[in-house]
Image 1 (cartoon, rainbow, N blue to C red):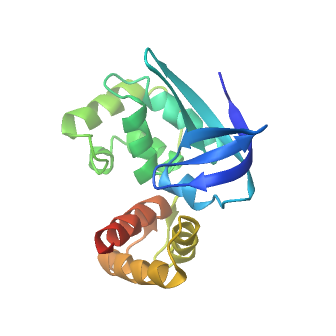
Image 2: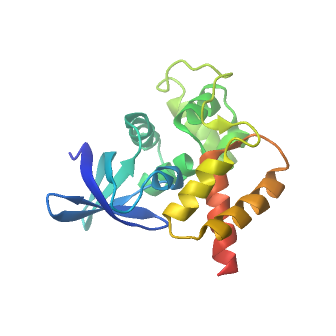
Length: 199
């Protein structure tokens, strides 16, 4: 089990990064929120989870140990593989996942591509007892209106877009959410979609 990697960031893409560890470039699949904190040439430490299949070894990386723990917990539910678990964390912070499962908020869970109503109900049923106690009021991953723009700008420029492109995307995303609170990961993913359409 590779629990973490530490080294210089050699490359950053829309779905993952390459971290140089002891002269070896290790490809790591990451969420948009994790990628937004990576800068090429800078040192980083990622908590990781190695998924072993008959024909592949895939490493998933996370900014925090808590994200990795939720990623692994989600996969204990039937029908949830690593791709879907990563998709959940691309939309929701770990605390938001806990709140959604503990409060049976299936609407929040179905905002994740690939999770329908029955899938959300199954997640609640199978994971509610494993998720632990949560405070539904405190969801740190949810930024107040106006509090997410800087993180999204930094994430976009770190992924290679210009400052002007990043600013234009932030303006469009802000219009989409119309002043409502939004998770940084959600806003960043939407901004990447906007910029992808304009290329």
